[in-house]
Length: 304
Image 1 (cartoon, rainbow, N blue to C red):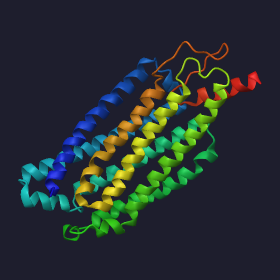
Image 2 (image 1 turned 45 degrees about the vertical axis):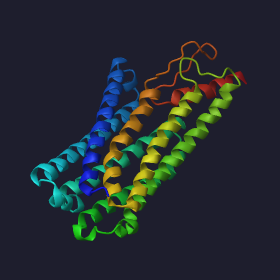
Image 3 (image 1 turned 90 degrees about the vertical axis):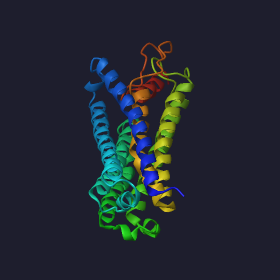
C-alpha cells in the first residue's frame, strides 16, 4: 500500500513539473501582451484579467514553495520514516494550514476569472453573473470553514476518512466551484453557439480572427480541465487521505495551466486568419472577447 510519505514525495515532484510548465506558459503570455505595444492593456477588462493572472501566479508560487519547505522538513530534518509520516498526517501544523489556505485562494481566483470571462463574452450583462457570484460567496464561506476545521484537527483523528466524508465545509467549497465552472461553461457555449449560427449564415467566419468553432472548442476544453480537476479533488477527499495529499497538491498548478491556456489562445489572438472578412470592416476576437461578439451582432443587424 502506498505510504503517506511516498505519496507526498510523488506529489511534490509532479507539482514541481506542472509548476514549471505553468510558469513558462504564463511568462510567454505576459511577454506577448507587452510586445503588442500595450494595446491590450489599454482596455480596462484586459487589465483586470492580467491582474487576476498575476494574483493567481503569486498564490500558485506560494503553494509550490510551501510544498518544497514541507518536503525538506519531512525528509531532511525529520529523517523520513515514522516522524515524517506523523508530520504529514497532522493537519494542524503551520505548513498544512498554509497549504489548504493557498489551495482555497487559488480556486477562488480561478473561478473569479471564469465568471469575468462569462461577463465579458455576454456583453457585460450583469444579470448573467448574479448566480455564479452568489455561489462564489458560498464557495468562499466553505473555504474559510475548511481552513478553520483543518487547523483544529490532530493526527490521532486522521486514522479514518470519516471526517472527510462529514466535512461539509470542504464539500461546499468544492461543489460550489464545480457549479460555477459548469454554469459559466454552459452560458459561454450558448452565447457563442448563437453568434456562430448568425455569422454562419453570412460567411461562416469572423474576419481577422479565429473561427468561432475554434474559440468554442478552446473555451470548453479549458473549462473541462478546471472542472475535472475540482471533481477529482472532491472524489479524493471521499476516497482517502493519501489521495487528498496528491490531488490537493497538484490542483493549483493544473488550475493555473487551464487559465493561462484560455487567455494565451483567445486573448492573444493565436490561430490568426487574416484572409476572411465580413463586409469591409473585419472583426477580431481580442483579449476581452467582447468586440467580436458585438461586431458580429451589429453586422447581422446591418445586413437585415
